[in-house]
Image (tube, rainbow, N blue to C red):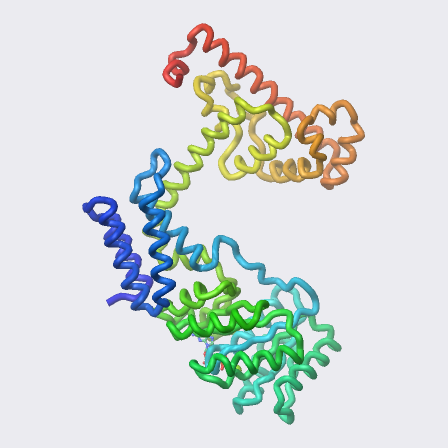
Length: 453
Ligand SMILES: Nc1nc2c(ncn2[C@@H]2O[C@H](COP(=O)(O)OP(=O)(O)O)[C@@H](O)[C@H]2O)c(=O)[nH]1
Ligand SMILES: [Mg+2]
C-alpha cells in the first residue's frame, strides 16, 4: 500500500489515537515501523538497530513533568530518526582550502555528470571560480554532455577526446584549471561498472585519486536503488576516509529507503541531495528536514512544540533557582544570556522565583535586552580573562581592562560599560530579592510564597 513517507505518517496517527496501554502501543508502532522500513529496502540490520534504540528509550525514559508519554515517544522517534540520518548538525559544504579538488565517483546512471554541473552551479553562485573536468572516457556522449552543462552554468571546462586514460586526463585538466586560477575543481568520472561490482569501481577510483590527490571524493548514489546503496556506501566508506555522499533523484523516489540505508550504512556523511534534473536542483542535506519529511512534520509539529516548550519552561525554573543561589559572576551571566537568547527576557526568569514575582519592577525596560545586544555581550564576555569573568568588579577598579576588552571584542568601551551596568543591575536586584525572600521566610509573608515552601 504505502511508501516510506505515507506509511510512517499512518503509523504515527495510529499510535497517537490508540487506546491500548502505552507499552503495547509502542510495540505495535515498532512492528509497523520495521515492516515499512524493510519493505522500503532499508537494510535489515539498520532497521533493527534503529527500532531497538527507540524501544529502549521509550521504556526507560521518564518524560519531564507536564509531558505525556505518548508525546515524549514522538520526540524520541524524531530524535532517533535525525541521528540515524547523520545527526543534528549540517555539514559544512564550503571548501576548507583553495584550490579544492573534488572527484565524483559512482556507477553509471547514478547522476555524476548532472551532479558535477549542479555543484559547479552551487559554488559559482557562492562566489567561487569553478572548473569542470570530463574524465569519463567510457561513455560516448559523456564529453559533450558535461561541456554543454558547463556552458549552461557558465564555468570553465576541460576535456580531451583524444585521450583515453582518465588519470592522465584528470592530471592535465587539473593543470589547466590551476592556470586559470580555479578555486574549486570538479572531476566527472566514468564509473562504468554496475551494481555488484563495487570493488572494481573502488579500484578505478583509487587509480584516479592517486593521480590527482583530490581533497574530497564524493560517491554519487541514486536514491531509488534501495538495498544496493547500503553495500556500495559501506565499501566506499571503507576505501576512502575523505569521502562524502551525494544522493540523487530524491525527487522521484517513492521508496526512499535506499537513501536512508546509504546514510545509515557508514560514517560517510551525506553532503548534498539532488532533487531534480535541472542544474539548480541541488541542496545541502539537512537531516532534520529529511526526518520531518518522513514523519510528516505537519502532524507532529504541534506535539514537538508542546514537548520542547514544556522542557524550556522547566529549564527556566531551574535557571531561576541557580540565579538565586549562585554567586553572580560574568560566567553565569554568559550562561544565562545564552539560554535566554532562545527563551525571552530575564524578567521572565526572575518571575519564576517563588513568591517574588510581585516585587519586580513594573516596567521591564531595564531588564529587556535585544538579541543583537545579547550577541554583542556574549562577544564581550568572551574577550575577558577568566579572572575578570569571576570578578567583574576588577573592571571597575582598573579602567584599562575595559579598554583592552573593547578592543578585543571590536566594540566601543561604552558597550563594555553598558554590560557592566547590566551586571550590576542584576546583582542589585538579586540582592534585594534575596533579602526579601529571607524576610518573607522570617515573618511568613505572602500566601503565594508559603504555598511554594
Ligand atoms: N529526477 C532526477 N533526475 C536526475 C537527478 N540527477 C540526475 N538525474 C538524471 O539521471 C540520469 C543520469 O544522469 P547522469 O548525470 O548522466 O549520470 P552519470 O552516468 O552518473 O553521469 C539523467 O537523465 C539525469 O537527468 C536528480 O536529482 N533527479
Ligand atoms: Mg556521466
